Length: 366
Image 1 (cartoon, rainbow, N blue to C red):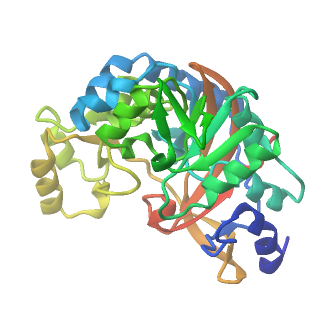
Image 2 (tube, rainbow, N blue to C red):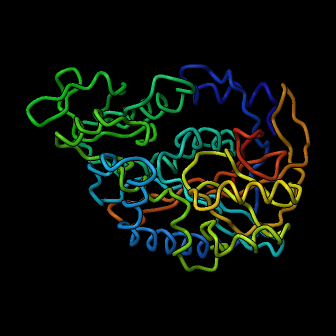
């Protein structure tokens, strides 16, 4: 096992702007899980294909949740990367919590971190990612110049290192003329959203709609993110999911150990409530204030923490953490082309999310 200093030095290249100033806690070992991984991937693809078939519902939900103009540049090509957030229940069965179809962050950083832990090069994500492009394409990686920017620039450096024609900049530097988009007089063929397309405003979408472009991740794929779509999917990995309405109101209030309620269209951990952690009066108030209001009730997975060694605070420490299991699956025009690294997220909190606090690790590949 590498020391903290050795590991940090190897990871600097994955952070071309900050050189790992963030120092996110990272598991010191690759994790082994007793799962039939091929079956897991097959099930997740089955779920995604069912979601693709709900494109009309997804479009209407997007119009209601945001605005009709957002759906104007949907092309129904479904190309990009999907991160499936799953957790083990007490029977050690994986259950799907939600899908991230907008822009799974840190994508190519995972190759660097996995390689450092494995102590040999591994480019699984990059090799799959490049299959989404034609080498003759002129690619612009569009990012938002705010917050954590390393992952955007690492993506640019890695794609460029494979001799693709690629630039990176923000929306403001795109020039729209004569039915095409340009960056520094170079006509753009593919716009890689290295930021969620939901962040675009009406004027920006109108400009994009006016020109000929391909997108990765495609905006229509992003629309599959709304959690309420899972209520129409049937698969052994799907937990019971229902819109929070009058039909289930009393059942949700009375069963204090069985549910999580969450908004259908919010990021990260925001406004997610585990029923077991709340008093009865809080449960009643939450249901009554959010009924018919873009909330859903989802079956609660009883999870157990595990002890894991973590690179943390300039040392290696052992900590008891909750965790999830997040495969990255790549799609090109509806079809799965492969599965990348499996991210494992750790948290001191039962709502597992890196921003909720703690860190990350990876499943050891077969």
